Every structure is written in C-alpha cells, then in structure tokens.
Image (tube, rainbow, N blue to C red; front, top):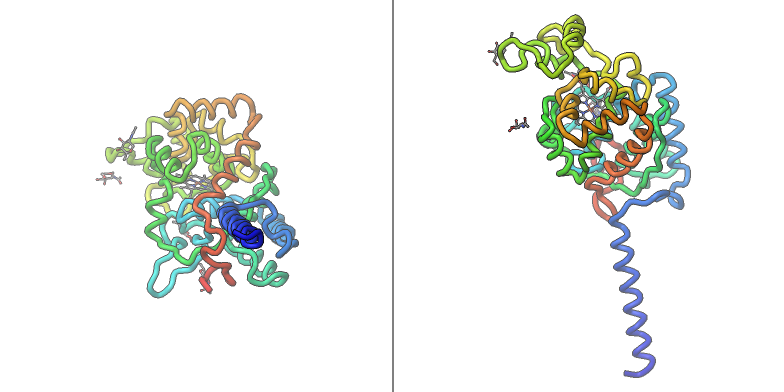
Length: 327
Ligand code: HEM
Ligand SMILES: *[C@@H]1O[C@H](CO)[C@@H](O)[C@H](O)[C@H]1NC(C)=O
Ligand SMILES: *[C@@H]1O[C@H](CO)[C@@H](O)[C@H](O)[C@H]1NC(C)=O
Ligand SMILES: *[C@@H]1O[C@H](CO)[C@@H](O)[C@H](O)[C@H]1NC(C)=O
Ligand SMILES: CC(=O)N[C@H]1CO[C@H](CO)[C@@H](O)[C@@H]1O
C-alpha cells in the first residue's frame, strides 16, 4: 500500500469513527442541547411558566403529573399532549388522564419558543422543563434537565390505561410497573412524593371509604379517623368533588407527604402500599422523621431518571409545530 493510500484509508476510518460516535451520542440527552440552536429556550419556558404559576400555583401539580404521564406511556415523547382525531382516541382522553389540567401552559411556552426559534425545540422537552420550573417555583427542588428529546407521532388511549399505575395498585404491581420503566424501588418511594402537592377527585379513592371488598366495608389500612373525615367530603358516587392529597400543604412542595403516609393517611392504596415493602417503608419513615433531609435531592435525581424513559433522540420522531398535533 502506498503511503498516500494508507493515509486515505486511515482518514476514512477516522471519519467513520466520528460518524459512529456521533450517532451513539445522539442516543443520549444532554444538558444545554439547545445552547447553539435556541439559546433562549430554557429562559422563555421558565418565564412563561412563572406567569401562570404566579397566578395559579395549583397548576404546578398538574404540570408535574403531565410529565409523569408522558414518560410512563411510550416514553417522554410528548404523546400525552396529542389530541384525539377522528380515527384515534389519544392518551389525553383515556380515563387516568381525564383530570390533567395545564395544557395551556405547555402550549403557551411552545408558541413563545416557536416565535424565537421555529421548529427547533420539542414539545417533549418543554414538558420536562415546565415540570421542573413549576416544582421549583412552589418551594420544590431545582434540577438541571438534560434535553434533546424528540416528539412522537403516536398517542393511544388504551396505552395510558395499561402503563399508568392505578390508584388501587398494590406494592407488587407498583414495583413491577416502575421496574418495567427502568425505575428502582427507591425511585418509586421518591417519586410517589410528588403527591405532596395537588388534589384528587373523590372517585379515585372512594372504594376505600365505602365498599372496599364489596361488603360495604372500609379499607382497614387507612386511619379510621381519617376515613370519617373523608366520608364527610366524599359521598358515594361523587365524581366531581376534589380533596387535597397532602391536606394543609397541598400547594407547597415539601416532605409532608411521607408524614401523611406514615400516619396511614395516604389517599390512595398506592400511597398506603409504600408501607408494605421494607425498602419503601424505610424511606417513608426516614423522610418523615428527618423532615425531608434528603427528599429534595432524591426527587431531583429520580426526576432526571424518569425524564430519560424511552426518549426519542437523533433523527427519531419529529419536532412538532403545535404540541396537540403531529406535523
Ligand atoms: C405511584 C403510582 C401513582 C399513582 C397510582 C398515582 C395516581 C394518581 C391519582 C389517582 C391522582 C388523582 C387524579 C384525580 O382524581 O384527579 C394523582 C394525582 C397526582 N399525581 Fe399521581 N400517581 C402516581 C405517581 C405519581 C408520580 C410519580 C408523580 C410525579 C412525580 C405524581 C404526581 C401527581 C400529582 C402532582 C397529582 C395532583 C394533580 C393535580 O393536582 O392536578 N403521581 N395521582
Ligand atoms: C385539543 O384538545 C383540547 C382538550 O383535550 C381542547 O381544549 C383543544 O381545543 C383541542 N384543540 C383543537 C385545536 O382541537
Ligand atoms: C397485588 O395485585 C395483584 C393483581 O391484582 C394480585 O395478583 C396480587 O396477589 C397482589 N399482591 C399482593 C401482595 O397483594
Ligand atoms: C358494593 O360492591 C358489591 C360488589 O361489587 C356490589 O354488589 C354492591 O352493590 C356495592 N355496594 C354499594 C353500596 O355500592
Ligand atoms: C372524573 C374526572 O376527573 N373528570 C374530569 C376530566 O377532565 C375534565 C377536564 O379535562 C374535567 O372537566 C372532568 O371533571
């Protein structure tokens, strides 16, 4: 082989190596993905979120929940935002999602970002950023959100039903569902702490108050005094009344959820179930006794992990123009 041929062969290999590395790299999210393509993106999202949260702090809960629902169904790909069409019932219209609020915040952030840099920033990333910003604006922890997610083109209502844990899930089911998304038992204990904010419709837990095993009984794992209190608010068959999940501090992101659960006052069976496993119950008691010494940090870490579930990167998916529709 002549020296020249050798060099060009090496050069070709180098190019190939760079190409392969680049593709491999595209599989991963990174901090500041939009640093060059839309440097103002994160600021714009934060300012938009702040405008809404300052007027309606309770929206933060729903914005956090939107991110959770997005990630658990088809990965964090913005599929939770897609509207149903004539031929397709989307996740948005599945039962567990029916009570999601706050889509207008995502839409406003998206249109503000589109004005500055059209077609660059995904709806999936905006969902992740808005959730982070909303939580941090109500005294919650702050975390850096790796970005570079792309938007999916499919949203199926039935998949929300099968991928989202139901409020009556027991600890075995919860662990299995989190594990199937690559999340650990600790992540389950930590992310359940999201219920430190927000509200629930009576219909999500009245089975525990009135007809737990079909014999007109109550759930023995719930504090009987709390059952009495909840019965005053939620009559059988009530589908419209809402109650605070962490009474008294449902607007502020703190560790009080764990104290509530430890007192057997968790609202859902899935909250109470955290006391049925050695590791999750240890975590509940630790946060309750230590007044949340590590909760903020733990929550931040688990949110970053959740935000990586099944993401589309590189050339997969698309960057939607409007979050409710595929291009
Ligand atoms: C562990 C399994 C989980 C179950 C079974 C569950 C179930 C539910 C249910 C039934 C509601 C009330 C819906 C309604 O009736 O209006 C709710 C609300 C909520 N969930 Fe979860 N959830 C789980 C995990 C999570 C996670 C991981 C997060 C976030 C990190 C989260 C954040 C929220 C928030 C913030 C609300 C309040 C929403 C609002 O105020 O609009 N949940 N959840
Ligand atoms: C998309 O769906 C939301 C509610 O699910 C609705 O408020 C909105 O009007 C829909 N958008 C369009 C353009 O149909
Ligand atoms: C949890 O629920 C599943 C499905 O309903 C059931 O098969 C299982 O026995 C339950 N496990 C426990 C520990 O209650
Ligand atoms: C309680 O559940 C049982 C079995 O599902 C049902 O037959 C009964 O009508 C329920 N009672 C009430 C008051 O809803
Ligand atoms: C049962 C329930 O949660 N219903 C709510 C579903 O969501 C819509 C708004 O998206 C509410 O109007 C319903 O009350």
